Image (cartoon, rainbow, N blue to C red):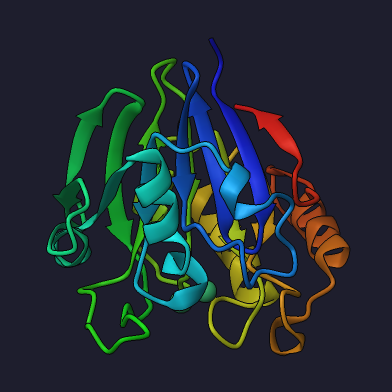
Amino acid sequence: MPTTFIWYGHATCALVVDGKHVVVDPFFRENAQASIDMDDVPADYILVSHGHWDHSGDVEPIAQRTGALIIANDEIARYYAAKGFKTHGQHIGGGYKHPFGYLKLTQAAHGSGFPDGFPGGTASGFLLTTPEGKKVYLGCDTGLFGDMALIGDEGVDFAALPIGDNFTMGPDDALKAVKLLRPKRVMPYHYSTWNVIKQDEKAWVERVNAETDADAFVMQPGDTLEI
Ligand code: NI
Ligand code: MN
């Protein structure tokens, strides 16, 4: 069964692998882009890239309701384990074969503090090799870094990259990121949720399609994509 990617809006998304839902950076209740109510989100696993509220804000209620396994860097995993949740800790550069595929935590140039002041270790991105052998790279919150070229060497089939600027890469750096990552397909996310990260996503997609070999496209919150 092919893997399906769902974009819920902002940086919140899910991968559906063999009927299991892997939710990434759940942020629904205060997310004006959210395409679904938090209480309706199916979750078997929850990936948390870093502690910022727009990525971790709805981890606990969803994990409480679903019993999903929380997967994150070791500091974040211990933070949730101490609250009684099921967790699996990994760390940057480390991969693990989960039932939904081989998940590696990748470097991200970003902070990771939780709203309550807990430091949250080091922010990460995610590189998932699906059971069918497709590679999905979720940049999550990050600035541009040259070692994206090493991630690109793995052969990325689909990438989601932040273009919002201010907190993450903006459009110019995200275009450079595409040149380093060389994904077959790429979509922008983490933009226009608030005025401070307002961007013209269509203009960015046009530039990527003109200047790289990647197939870039805009998704709408709630849209799904077969990987
Ligand atoms: Ni952040
Ligand atoms: Mn963010």
